[in-house]
View 1 (tube, helix red, strand yellow):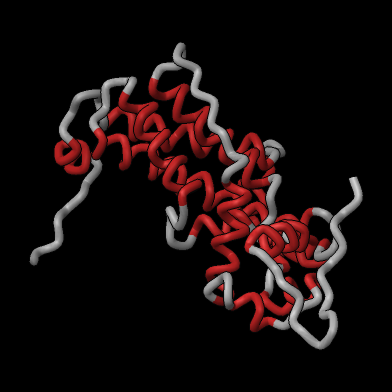
View 2 (view 1 turned 180 degrees about the vertical axis):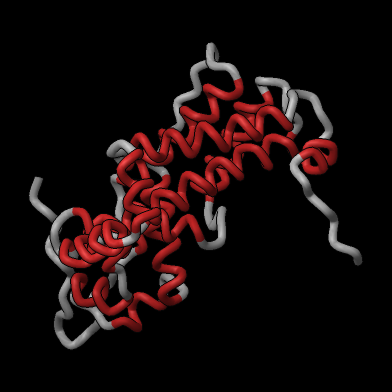
Length: 235
């Protein structure tokens, strides 16, 4: 498929652009490289032309971030129990976010920021509602699992350059520091090599097991929070 050519200034007048044009070029640049100037240059217009459609950098991020999130569809297997469902939910988020650089950082900010985020949150609540949870408890459970999954994805994205070569020297320094410490070297010798995917599943399994143990279907959300050690701040 041939990409649409950028719009250019003609006859001394600013070329007309649409929100769809901005979204398309923003997606092409990707969230990590997204700037108002970059999109404006790609479209052959001034940054001022973009400000007529988006509210600066944050508005541009929302437009592009929500466009990416529209493609995320969580598959809910009705045969899954609560724990299996939440683990599948976390893994689907992990796979999608990992495949879209910059999305983890976008989702770590205010969420939801648009219709796509609202849909994802509502569907997560509905899925747990089918398993006996009230809306408040469902928001707490799905939100906690999603937040941890996204934070782990963000950490993986930050660490990737150290394992893929561009910062490999720094990683070698870490290995040398660990090897030079008698206690830490012995600890490392006991541990197997664990892939990032396996580590993600281990951490999520532990978190979800604890949440589900404290949060039985139908249990009031206040009781669940108390079971998890929540203490209300004095007003």
